Image (cartoon, rainbow, N blue to C red; front, side, top):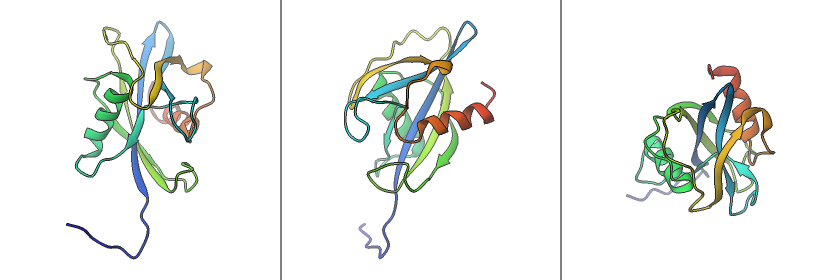
Length: 145
């Protein structure tokens, strides 16, 4: 069923914050972007919602496509909707979070539109793409990590 709307609509994306503890250190799973915008910069794994999937399905799909990681329980954290958060246009991102257990056997590997995927210490983060620095700041303020 096609609808024609008089007004433009924003796009919707999902992003995954996957954390793990290594000793006393908190780490976050990041991908190095293969494509513009922000090519060669680090970012949270994520991407656009497909028309035939839920937010929960999309975030699991994107996490698996970009990092090879799967089976991680992800919970919805917050939506981010700043007008200029994505140079491609007004894009609302629904961000999820989860924890990779210490027994996690999977090793992240960049694939799809990610050059690389690896763990980064939260206190030694590189400059991040989009508004992902702000997303992580809000997560640290709000979640018991």
